[in-house]
Image (tube, rainbow, N blue to C red):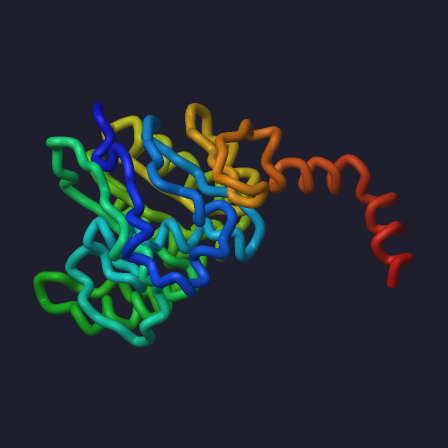
Length: 238
């Protein structure tokens, strides 16, 4: 099945000449970007721009900047950039039946709003009564469905390695049934999903890379295989 979002383009004439967006190497030269796989991972160091791009895509697709479904209309703090206003999403002729924007840093606000939206016909999932990780998985179990469009920003933030494997399976099953995912992550577990495209943000202009080329994989491999020597070196530097 064709992806719901096939391509994005950015009109830099709509971005202020002094905007910090122009100082992010991976984004500043980005004019167009195609999505050819059902799952696209955005990887890079903190501050490399992956969450900024993901957020702009989600807002351009009609989601609330703080997260939730398209029915979530609230704001607690206006922190998103103007990038979405300069972004155009090229969509297929198919419309997603479902969707969700999961943003780790503002999920508390979404969980609070979900409780406010609840009524007799739509009872609350009571996310605040669950652990952070349990809440994330509850979102996946409720909203990840066939023919959906999903934007996930660091979904591994509250999950144990075992639960990350559970999430990986949920994403795989959902993507296999016609859903599309764009995910910003640091997780070497999630990045191992077969068939996904990985785009790297932290080495200049945005570029595709293999799983083994990601810093998440390389650092984890180095730590596991050379833990004693690595820790000895790091601690001696103190």
